[in-house]
Structure formats: structure tokens, C-alpha cells
Length: 139
Image (cartoon, rainbow, N blue to C red):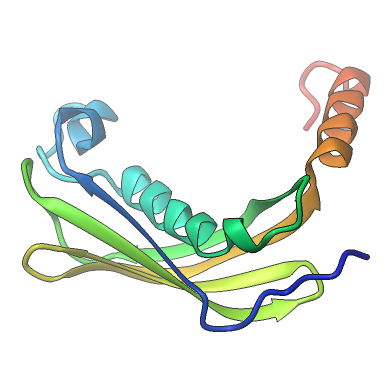
């Protein structure tokens, strides 16, 4: 097992401006011209990645395994959104983050994200070898 030097309380952030590319209208029509929930999830996950990526040993990355968020309020086009992630638990190579997101007016999202630290080369080899063995229609 690798030696991790990750401490609870590490923080990361990510920011974007709501536009046509990340609006709900991109995913379904008709839909509101507001920040899409899948994009909120992505922004929160990026904040979690940013909280720990500079502390990971060379050759290691974190991969997402579980996301549970609540999208609390809509954000219209042209408004800035900031996601914040705080590392709340480290168990072996499992990381748990509390995430929150705000627009220029209010909190728009909150939840938890779970990520695991893996060796990039080993993970890639396993993924590629597994994908080659699966039959069409299998997961």
C-alpha cells in the first residue's frame, strides 16, 4: 500500500460561468436556460480533485466512485458558479469530500463525493484488459 500524506481539511475549488454549453438546454429541450445539474456535479467533482491532486504521489490519481448531491437553486446564464470541496475523511485510499456550490446570490448545491486513489498505470492496464474480455452487452 502506498503512503499517503493527506489530511482532513484539505480544500479545493472550481469555478465557471453559466453559458449555453453548460446549460440545461444542452441536455434536453425544452428546458430552462440555467446551469445544468450534470454540470454542477462535474464542477463539484473537479473541486474535489483539486483539493488533493498536488498531494498525490507521482503516478497516482483519484477516481470518482460515488456522488450524492442536491441541486438547491437554479442559476441563469451569465452568472458565476463556484464549487468548494473539503476532504472530510481518509480511510486507506478512500477519500470523502463535503461539497458545496454557490452562485453570485446563494448556495445552489451541496453533497458528498467519494474518490479512491489508484495507480494510473495499473488502473489503465486492468481497464484495458477487462474491456477486451467482456462480451457485447455485458457490464
